[in-house]
Image 1 (cartoon, rainbow, N blue to C red):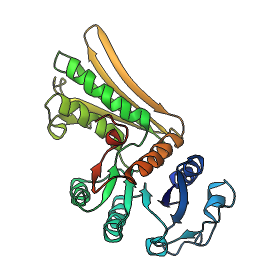
Image 2: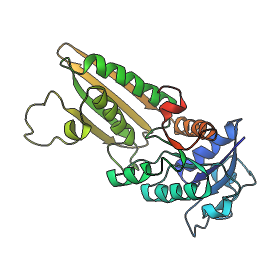
Image 3: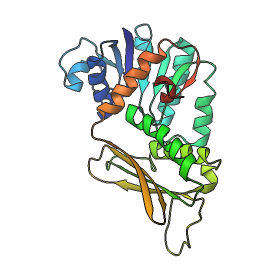
Length: 268
């Protein structure tokens, strides 16, 4: 049984992760972390998640549960994640990171731990999304340089703080790399006013933030006479949570290195 701790256990994703661990026969919940000084310190994690008492109480520091856990799952914020990554390196723990919105400097800091920590880092833990990435690679190689315009459209709930989503950016990166392009050079994230005709090598992005949309992503390959759309729609956060728990069980048996969900699923 892989002993898992969840950071941000009282949040929407944290509560879903508790449920996912409980449903997984190969994992057990060994700890949950809330913000320092939170009134929820000492609360039963199972009751916070609505699954009943589990006998595991929330703490506000990783040090309090360092001896009890094998793998940390972190879907928080870049700075919190980097601090937790350093903790894992110091204490010989493994980590699964689903945090998005990291800038170039933060990504470089994260990557610097690849020789110190066994970690899985992915913009999206969904098995379906990662299969979609593989499909996009195939489609881009077949279509992208044959007069097909490429657009990425994503939609999420009103509370999401970063845009475009990490998943949308990853989809754009996969397409760009498959075509030998740079997303930094050819990605277009805003079109306002008289922006002129579309450059054939553009990879455009459009963002929707509304209601309680869990996550929808479409990559469109459009040319004169036809349009191909590859779409993934998530109807529950559980799809991300189950993927994260699967990654935690997988990385528990891995040596030091930075891995992706493609590695977890055997797609790379």
